[in-house]
Image 1 (cartoon, rainbow, N blue to C red):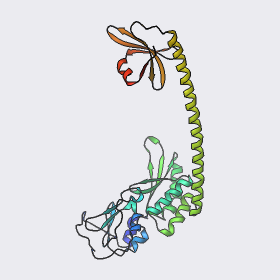
Image 2 (tube, rainbow, N blue to C red; image 1 turned 180 degrees about the horizontal axis):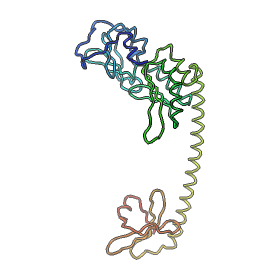
Image 3 (spheres, helix red, strand yellow; image 1 turned 90 degrees about the vertical axis):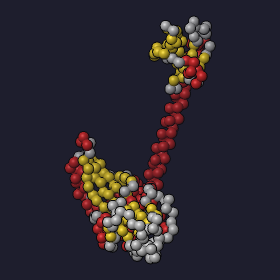
Image 4 (spheres, one colour; image 1 turned 180 degrees about the vertical axis):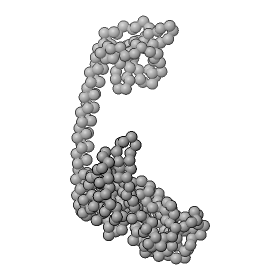
Length: 304
């Protein structure tokens, strides 16, 4: 169902004026609370609001006497509420049924199935990706039943360069009585209690993976530190053997991206060069080397 079908049903008129200077019902109280505005207007609340509601391409505007609310509140994660100078309130489409959309997105993440939630300033879109065209078409056909429960659209996208196909189910709004039947259809989750159990299990699984990864990181860091210490010990031993000053410079230890290197300074045609060797003596480079500046910056250390 198209979102416009719902607005046509309860006579939410499409306004042809981009900017209205006056509130069309300045003395008529709106049947809405600050909490309802800050948590996302529902379809049910809009139907019984009792004041003129005008719709535009990106939002609806509620006229009348609107209660005070926190207009900094980010409904649905975005700045979707605008208090106008004439007292009316602009509500972006992404804020309509925001709590219901959040529940759908939570369920899709917890189910970890084919549908993946994508939330942006326009609202919620469930996406499923396929490599095979026939499989994508069959999935879209099967999703028509779920799509009929919401105000939104179901469409497919062909990715460039043959990368695959994406089936998108955009959810503009959803009636309260269709909420859990829709969630069951797309995720297999039947109720809030089941969702809480799945989220707890998913969180525990992620924490276990994070702990395992941290163990690997700690072991890797310890191994790297041991290698660095062994390399430094080898360099220091080599430095002791070459303790006598070199004719054109001194023996240096160069710290470069965490590695310890040996550099011997040489003067060639009036320019200072550094002959750099690794810990095992393999020559890496021979190039211009601004050693005084590097020494001051702490990137070069004098051993001798």
